[in-house]
Structures are given as C-alpha cells and as structure tokens.
Length: 230
Image (cartoon, rainbow, N blue to C red; front, side, top):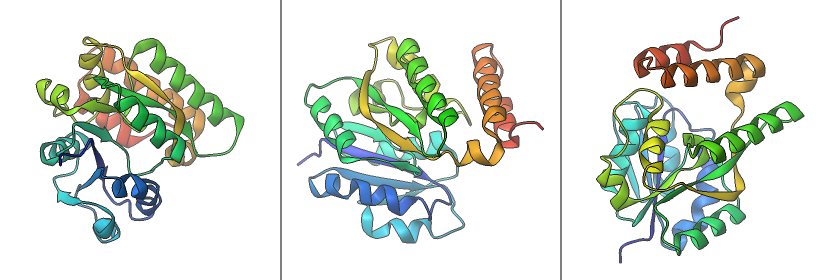
C-alpha cells in the first residue's frame, strides 16, 4: 500500500542530533509512514546512525534544496513532510499532523519553539510564528508538509543555495494559505547561541530583506555562512 506520509530529512554531519529525531518519529514509522534520510556528504557517522531507523538512506551533493528534492523524487507517500535533522517532534505534534492530513490539505507547517532557555529565545520563536501566520510563509525548521502531487506540479524546491523554503511557500500560498499546526516543533537554537542572539536576529532579517529586494540567493548564502558581523 502507498503510505500516507513520507518524511524527508536532509542531513549533513548531524550524527549527534539525528538519533533524537529518529526516536521521535519511530512510532510514525511503525504506523506505516516512510522515513527517507538524504545525506549531503557527511564527514561524521550520520549515515551509520540513521541506517536502522529509516526506510531509504540516500546521498546527494550538499545543499538542502537538492537533498530535499532527491528525497521527494524517491518518496512514495501522498504527503511529503520535510523535517530538519536538529528538530524534535512530540506526540502531540504527530497527532495534529495525522488529524490534519485526513482533511486533505494542500500544504501546511508547524509553529516552532527554540530549544535554548531564556525569555528572548521564547520571544523570537513567538515572533517567527506570528510572522508566518501573517505572511503565509514558513521556514524549513517549521516542518513544511505538502501534498506530493502539488509539490511535483510546482517542480519542487528551486535549485538555490538559500531561501528555497521561502521560495516554495511563495508559490504555494498562491494556491491556498497554509494550515498552521500546534503543538510547536522544537528546533535547535545552537546557531543563535553560538553567534549571539541579537546579532543572529539582525543577520536573519538582513538576509530576508535582501531576498525580497532581489539580492541573489548565492550572495545571501555567502552572508549566511559567514555569520553575524562583530
């Protein structure tokens, strides 16, 4: 039987975080969901860690858009759920997704909560969720899910090194606004904590504004990987 859901996880050097996510998803897999991990040339034990927890272990060149498109091309489910490797998913979120898929939506996403402690990180998570509800745009760490036929009709993620999630959502919202699900997914705050919370906020907004004003994704990717300026 064709599974209702294919979960696609792009990963690169995520051997430490990945087992936590795969344990969260184990019950879904037992219930018939398909889990596909697409490794982007990891230099750690990512593939070894994932091997016994997934239905397909694929490889591609690094790059989230390429990795997610690779997974989608191999998926069998009616719905595709793109989940970052450093995400945690609780049973309430899983049940919310399954209940929603029975209504056959075209696409949707989750609220998100940052993993670190402190009111500032809580506020940032709340602002991400509010911005997403107003704009009908989601970022990749919000667990975007989409009907496979719809994803294929839009030719999947654009082959760009950054903002592929925003680009896809802009095309999807022309069709319909997303379903916005709770409970929130828990996403790692490591980048915020390593690079400085406020400096990372400024960087993210600079990249987002640059994208809307036509700066090339290649240029934005260089800024992103360079990190916040001192």
